[in-house]
Length: 338
Ligand code: PHE
Image (cartoon, rainbow, N blue to C red):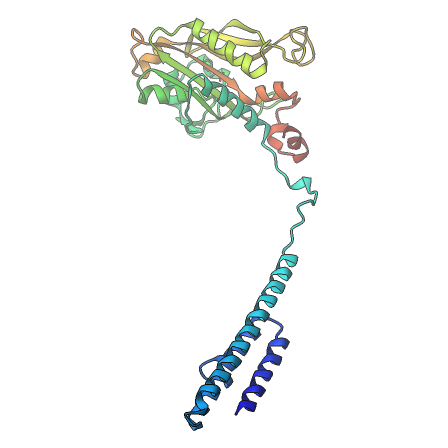
């Protein structure tokens, strides 16, 4: 009987030693120590022993079992460590691999738009966005541009139907906000706009940012202060601004705003075409008729509005010579503005 036990223990020990992975080891465990296992079966022989023999036999069986269990545990730890090592080896990622081409960068237009938005957020403005497919009502009529108005020629419009169009500027957002919200209003509205126009500085699709402030006692000097601060934040502390009289149907008075050239500091260069100034935006005091159209009492409230091209700002800031470069998305170009 004792010899049989010794044989089984030895057989088991050899099997454990030869096991090459943890699942084989688990099978061995079941084969020997499981409920119907070979080793467990020995205990059934106990009933043939005399009561005197049983205790020493039982002790021997238990010791054998403990030995097998220990061998299994040792082997299991060894196999697991090996399996882990192999897994780590096969899943290694070489973090030193140099693959610059796979790294993306933020589009220059997004960079500039984010910068503009951040400056105005710092001045207490709120961001509002609206539809690119707009009605004639919001794009023109509420902004004091009736159907037969010659000012429509200023903006070559893509019409979808007689009354639906691709917005030609972000100014319809002025009307959208004024018709739905009560003053005080202090918003900027970035977004895409569309015009039938195509040359080195004009693209049929481009980006604008609209600004609108409506409150009690707002005047042209608030507009000047606000835009001067913006220009300095955007193009550098030394930047000067210049306001020239202009015309927009939705503002009165209207101005065109120039900034001193950031490339030559105002001396005159290629970028500013020798003038020392670069035109960057249109603005003005909101026309009282526009306030009335949008349900705001011009006797109680006044405001200013401005609108500028993000593309133009990006071209000035990064010296990009052709607007189309920003829409062709050639990675060799985009890569330069990380
Ligand atoms: N919407 C005008 C344009 O696109 C710019 C503008 C906005 C002018 C607000 C005055 C006030 O040319």
